[in-house]
Length: 222
Image (cartoon, one colour):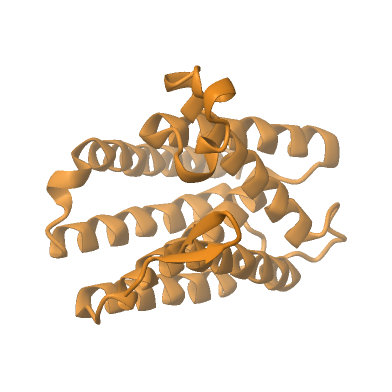
């Protein structure tokens, strides 16, 4: 299959169309998720907030390419369309979202658990579409099961009991880490993601510690 579609002077990588569809789908899911779980008037339209998250992340991730190759800013600025900052850029993008999320909390009083929940559903939805790009080149049972697993996890988010708390969100994040790691092992990709694997496992441990701390705090208040 041809991976490129030419539109004028630009060559569009076909899987990018799946990525765009994943982003759009995350906006739709965010709308219905907030409608299902929030009883009060939300300060922003959930889809608008999700668009802002994506813009912050993608802009930082893409522009971070020029940190490694500063000369390309003048010599080849269109390189940002085809290249990105890699793992370092992803990290900067996450930091950008953290800062942006904090500003949303301070300015619009959008609680941290709700923001984390919106980001988590976006991860589930986007990875589902990302993995689905593999079907362009043939059917893979493990990838199919992984995509279905993320769809099921999105469904579980809709079944969260009100109110949404940090403990519940941490539990959901931990299930994501477990699912992601399991399928990386099943697909023999673990050697490609060694550093990432260490990071996500550390995050899983941190969520367990944070959950324990929050449980102890709740018990102390009661």
